[in-house]
Structure formats: C-alpha cells, structure tokens
Image (cartoon, rainbow, N blue to C red; front, side, top):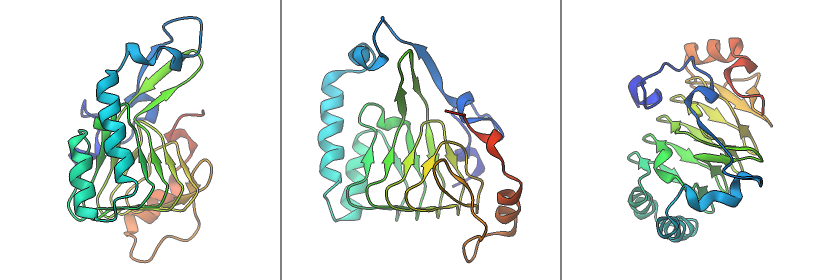
Length: 201
C-alpha cells in the first residue's frame, strides 16, 4: 500500500495522533450516546451490513469473504486473509481499509466508531500491505497500521503502528525483538516510538 493510502482522508501525514483523524460528536441527549445511534445510521443499512459481516465470520473461502466485505463499502486488498470469527464494524464498515497480502487473526475486532457516555467518535482504520495481526486483537478507529507491521495476539491497538514495527499488549507498546525480515527503518521507528502517538483513553 502506498504512503498516500496510509494517510487520513484529508491527506494528513502519519505524524498526526489518532484523535486528529476522528470526527467527535456530543451525545444527542442526557443518556449515553449509544441510546441515540439510530439518529446517525440507517437501520436497514446496518441490518444488511450485519448479515454480511456475520456470515463472513464463518465463511472459510477467503476470496469469497473479501468480495462480501467489499459489498459493505470496506476496501480489502488482493490476497488478504481474514480469519474466522473476525468482527468488522457493522455501523460504519466503509471506514475500514485493508491492504494486500495482509493477515487478520481469529476473533479480531476492527472498529470505525466509538460510543462513549457523553460523545461518540467515528474515523477511518487504515491497515497497510503485508501486515500480520494476531488473534483476539481490537483495533480502534482513527488508527493507521503501516506496511509490514506485526501485532501480537490479544492486543489493543489504540494508536498508529509504524511500518515494519513489532508491537503488542493492552494498550500496544513496542516489543523488544522485531520479527524476521522487518525493515531497518521499521526497527528504528519501533525504538523511538512513544505513547504520544495515540489517545490516552
């Protein structure tokens, strides 16, 4: 995936924080923002998205699965493998872009939105080419994952991941040993990467 694809829709650079890519809206009333979800999305579209995405959780044929995901507005590159039980965002799947020859591990969740008590957020998720994401990860909206990055299983991805980096944990942090074949630049970025690249919450 080219560097242009690793930028937010407005063309900002990767140096921006996750929060800078999010659209943040106040709750529409006195209750938590999820109570007002149907003011923001078309219920029929959500039902359609849910049926397709839920079916894809069980479909073993990768090519068919990718074609089905594209029907929801998701961008999925060639030869990408999305494992069983992966849960994509059913409200805003069009916010998700996945590059080519990438692996998304079993039971991972990718979100294009966050509903909180007093506000809700929506933003793009961009996953590059040749990325490996382990099982049971959660990827939050506004995150950019660079080409060749590796994310260990059971990780919370709440900030950008540099190309070639090896990260893991809740929330993610650089891991000490980069994967075999990681680029030199990716290793250097991992060493200098810090918590300022994402949201605190």
